[in-house]
Length: 136
Image 1 (spheres, rainbow, N blue to C red):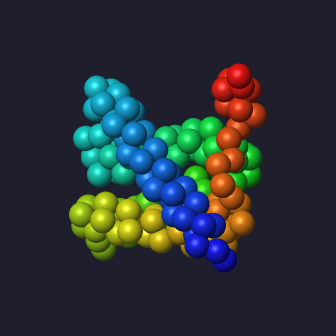
Image 2: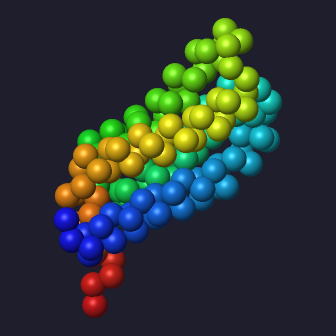
Image 3: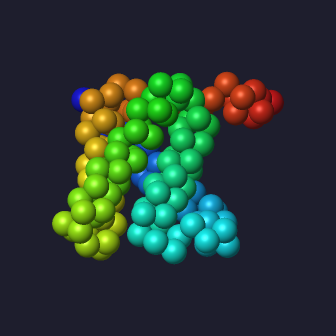
């Protein structure tokens, strides 16, 4: 592993986190208007959806295939789904679901990215449609 590849990997992680935040900022108000965020379950599910959509869209722009987007989406949503079961039985509080869900999501994302280091550390892979749009 070279320093340069590690830098590309870290940049990709930061880009995905920014895309997740953008997804929440863009889609979050919609769910509030519709009324889906009034409960912990609704808030957690819409938040996970928003982050996944933002991250998936950015991964598509970066040229990742559907399999990679799907597996990253799964590791992002899984911690929240797993924590909703103990929450439903009253074993953990809503704050635990939010906080632990985010922490476990980031850990799962990092583990997956390390497992596929070669794909996530490749410099500047852009989707073909993006490459065509910026040809001179």
